[in-house]
Amino acid sequence: MERLRCVLKTCRRIPVSALLAAVGILIAFLSTLGCFVRAPGLSMSMAEGDTLISVDYEVFGKVQGVFFRKYTQAEGKKLGLVGWVQNTDQGTVQGQLQGPTSKVRHMQEWLETRGSPKSHIDRASFNNEKVISKLDYSDFQIVK
Image: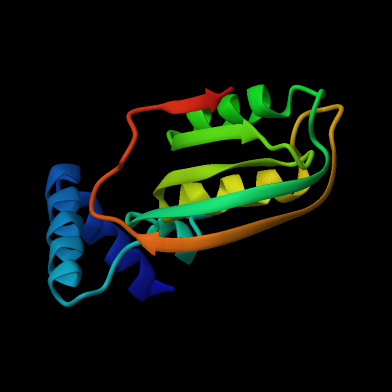
């Protein structure tokens, strides 16, 4: 206990700015070693989600006539993704997503489980996933 008091007294004498600078130097040093610092609650996949990917999707179920495309476009834009969505003659909805891996994964989960309020999703399939160097689209479009 006496040793703890001594340490606390020593810390009180060090200016806060010096402590913050030391923390910054430590973080910079760890970065050069290939380590990374994660914010609390940030999953590993989100920390690694800077890679741009493209993936095609098709959603099966009651997904036409229930504003599925409109909600898909809104969710994609909310996540900062680009791509497109359209109805098919087979009664499904298909499209393409592009953006950071973590955001695309979030959208894939949304397409599989949520969709629009009045939709009923049976399943979603994802194909042709690939890493891309740049986005092919500038926004998220509904294709008629």
